[in-house]
Length: 252
Image (cartoon, rainbow, N blue to C red):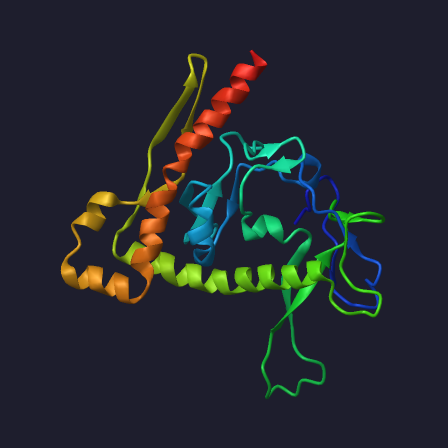
């Protein structure tokens, strides 16, 4: 697995002694690996993200579904990036986490009877956001969590919980045949266009045809709200197209 840039990732379990001077740059830019066209997102984020990003599904390597926020139309294009700013009111958690991720370990002295695979925070020391000076401190002088690290803990907790929540949601929607492949052909101008292949979305006609029992089940499980949030996010696609058109016009 490679970190953004050319260096291989180098993960270490976060430690207040070993990483007491660790600082993390929180700006944005291609040099931080932010020039990506889509990022994974999770159900708990939908209420906020649907105001800014078009959200679709794509297949993961195992053949299951994963929700993604569309950021651009080319492989290394993020239309929310403008110089060193991210032009949106909220960030997907997989962007906000920076160089951190959840790892797992068995507790020290484990005799096999206690809980296994406890989640712990790891940091990629080769990530371009890890800096020698400037940026946000991860630990306070006394070894306690900085406000930034407290924020990261919340972000990682949301990702950790979101993985399982997403798996359950997507499997349920797929079982009801509500997830269908999309054909999205976008024209930016006379010379530029793109076909967004491999994306899936909620089938509006299938949703409208559900019987009362199925709709009630979706509502009681909280999945109907997620479905409507996903559908509402689609209006952001036109905003993204408009930004692409503006940037193409600026180059001409």
